[in-house]
Amino acid sequence: MPAHVVVGMQWGDEGKGRVADLLAQDADIVARFAGGDNAGHTVQVGDESFKLHLIPSGVLHQDVVCVLGNGMVINPLKLVEELRVLESRGVDISPDRIRIAENAHIITPIHTALDSAKENQRGAGAIGTTRRGIGPAYMDKVGRMGLRAGLMRDIDRFAEAVKERIVIGNRILTTLYGSIAVDGEAMADELANAAQFLSAYIADTPLLLHRALEDGKRVLCEGAQGTLLDIDHGHYPYVTSSSPTVGGAITGLGIAPKYIDRVTGVAKAYSTRVGSGPFPTELEGDLGNKLRGTGENPWDEYGTTTGRPRRCGWLDTVVLRYAARINGLTDIVLTKLDILSGFEEVSVADSYMCQGELMHEVPGDHLMMARCEPVYETLRGWDDAISDIQQLDDLPGAARDYIDHVQGLVNRPICMVTVGPSRHQFIRVF
Ligand code: GDP
Ligand code: IMO
Ligand code: MG
Image 1 (spheres, rainbow, N blue to C red):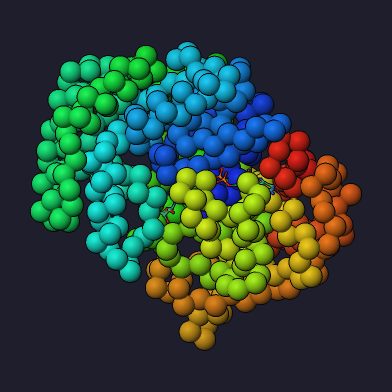
Image 2 (image 1 turned 30 degrees about the vertical axis):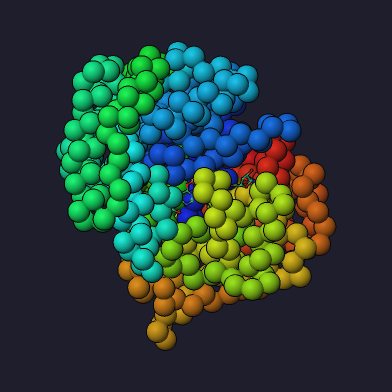
């Protein structure tokens, strides 16, 4: 099984990081292909919780090589910080096991400043971005004015390029948005220090991956964000600026499609979304609050990256079928089933009612999606805690019915169900 792609099926935060960590046991390389430090992937190993933003979850497996692919946008300051934290916690961060694509793009403080300024200007129409500079960095990339990671090999040229970029960005920042200018000199120095450290990590990763795949090595492609946040396939403009779907794995790593023989979708047993945009099954009031949790538990629904409360609602299988189609999923991991324990009834949306019309597909237009009312099927809930269960047959009957029902509606096999954040808290179905 050479390349195995893992993607989020909803709006991000489905538990991709913990799933990638589990699957990394069978991988030689784990490669991130999209996004930047807008992602927050939580992996719990024993009592320790790791929050990864840029580095693939495979880093917690000593024998795995990690790749930050060319489809990513990388903030060098954040990457150095993340590497240092991992190092302080005993993780091997040597450059022979972490490789950064020379053709990945760089996020600088001007990108983060522009992201925030644009969001402030949008006011009530804000996208609710993570303000990590993601959109502006991808704008520079497609505008053919971006800075690429390979430039960090030549510190002087890199520092010059950063200064130039900040000068141009400051004009927009001050005149268009009325914001305070970024200090180009200071930032170029700081980034040059980071580049000095990171230069040893830069590599021709498409070549590295190609050679590994040809040698029969197993590559796990770790998705970030989710299908409904895809720049093309999500509800534009309430999306991120990259391609978190399967096509993004091919361009974002520079590997040929012929190597991909498995595409696993990760779906939370209910739905969440951070930021603005349509969300038909969103629940306000007691049910939504119960799904979100109070914030006492690390897995409660508050953003890993920004700490924002996540919007919560019932599972939407119209969305899951869409993700299955767009990504050509071979199988699904259903996460956080334990969170549904204690609900008298659980609901699943299987279609929408939109302006008097019954719809079984996700509409492409965000205004149309915002008008969709979910049509629910209601199933009986279960009371028992399930976090220690390791066999499907030991689950309460109602929980098994829920899994079967979702599998039937999405028409893709569920290969694994997770029942807690720790490495051992999962049920393998096949
Ligand atoms: P990602 O961005 O898709 O990797 O997901 P996040 O890490 O942002 O959010 C998932 C959260 O749920 C994290 O806090 C995980 O530790 C936690 N989590 C993952 N799987 C489970 C599970 O099966 N049960 C519970 N209770 N928490 C889980
Ligand atoms: P992981 O990998 C959840 C959302 C933001 C916002 C929109 C655009 O942890 O699942 P951006 O900063 O990318 O321009 O914001 O996308 N978003 C995420 N939501 N999980 C993520 O990553 C996300 N990455 C971006 O909240 O709505
Ligand atoms: Mg996350």
